[in-house]
Image 1 (cartoon, rainbow, N blue to C red):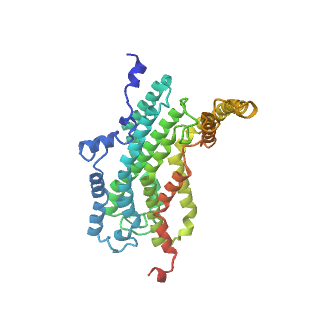
Image 2 (image 1 turned 60 degrees about the vertical axis):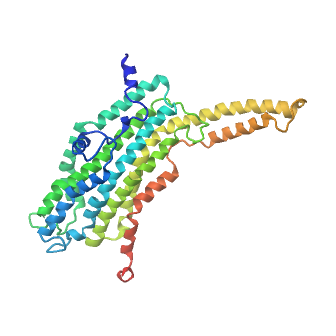
Image 3 (image 1 turned 120 degrees about the horizontal axis):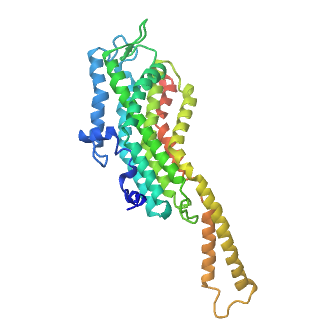
Length: 394
């Protein structure tokens, strides 16, 4: 059997060839620990296990050290909103979102097949893109590099220099030589925070793999139909996948909300000071989630131009024949005007041309953008209460 033919049968429609989370060292480790299965189930069990690993030790150690409610720290563990939101809200959302996004991406692959969007002579190229995506997903080197980045840059640079507050807290006590980590702080900086950053970075790596796959597919001359009722030449199914990213947008909003809450409560910040920061993050997130779909814009625009030209020419010929038959020429004596199939065909022609004119050049809808933006902003909105006078809040 030729090599290309063997590849084309490697993945069938509906198979998890582009399942972004059913692969890689972490997935195999969770599989051996029976915390996950091939369908990414047992979400509750993974959430409970992760919370027990990254949050529960912090609770126990802060109680032992007397930093749970206060002690000599300005930020006790019980009041560290950022910590609790990060580990008890954001991490569960990241874990819970995995099966939803995976199912959407599996559907993408199936729809490209079922809608016959890939020409026969490009099927091997399409399957090679799937093989490449799966190779990146299963890469042990990628996750090792990600882990190195987390410990070498995420914790030592990003967290210490830009995220951690310059105040005594349950995890760090300022001193002349710099911040001194408590026992809880050592677990926080050595286990909890790196694991959180790894999970978040793994999400971005998976999003990159999906974006790369879509880029490869966009280089294939797709068999788009400009009169397709989805107004996207048959690619309307791509827009539906954006709904699966709502939990991810919500997780990012909760993460930002927790960080801002600490800065408002413990560093004297005011919510209006962070408006530009919030806007920057939401724009960047929308670009990451919706940007990959814009790679199909050139083909959609070309299909629309060709459709207008070809159907315009067809409509011109039909209208000329209709005009000659019913307007300028003598009407057929044996064919009544009322009930004539010509009238219905004329209406159908107009409807088809109208669909082409309404065809969008991007699978990204305004509704999807607003939905993702609303999910991101929802956890931040309650911070507006901090702008109210204390008497009003009471």
